[in-house]
Length: 176
Image (cartoon, rainbow, N blue to C red; front, side, top):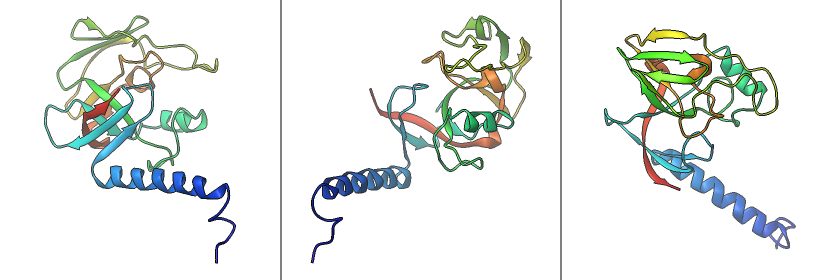
């Protein structure tokens, strides 16, 4: 006997929901991450142990983690704050010199495009940047930033992150 959920318009909806749930589970189990944000090219990224992998998955530090939740910069996920981890490129590592200015992040003298900190987010709310200045990256930390999208929420706002917060290193697998 068929119930109301297995006939009529609900059948295609259930099929789509099941397909997306299964695909998400397979990706997570198989070491693949889906990026649908504008911080990196949309696509699939594979988890790797390769030392040269410069993309990382991490949960942002407080207090900006809370701000990113309240302002809905991130979607629900499995970070301690209840939202999803961020995927960002490492732009500076131990020993590098980072200059934070109104022009953006300058790493060892090279200005990264699209990294100028904004004073307001996309909805017009005030957004504080990391203090302008020159920083030498300490051992055990990295700076992360997207030069792909000028609206990225990254080290231009929260500064360096501890390597201990890095959950995974990633490499592009299939991107647009």
